[in-house]
Image (cartoon, rainbow, N blue to C red; front, side, top):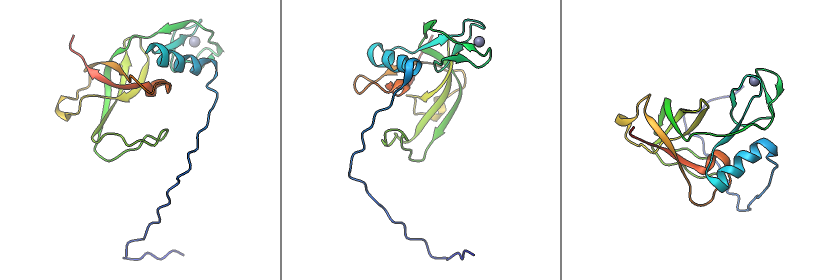
Length: 160
Ligand SMILES: [Zn+2]
């Protein structure tokens, strides 16, 4: 049985000073996405040979058709439309790299013009300017690339 105290719990903080670098294999499909993002600032994916749908992220088989997806690679348009957004105002940390995100921290589900959906940060910080349907395009990091979609710094608002 747990008893609750009206006193606040004391939290113990443990700092790890030892770096823990590691490598993992990304495989043929995600590896291609990472390579193209890093070297060419491109978002690539593959297309199912049967249903012709873009498979995002790139994958070895089409879940709809249950067939080998093959390597019909497509360089996707980096422009898209915001279909949903979230405006976070609490501190967040990148679970992969441990870096603290900016605060506030707008993120969005974006439907790229080629039809693929992805989630990314938005450059726009003014909540009054965030709208479903706003047009955006990818802005890439100049340095430190090699993390796939993490190489996209954010999507900036565009006028068309
Ligand atoms: Zn298919």
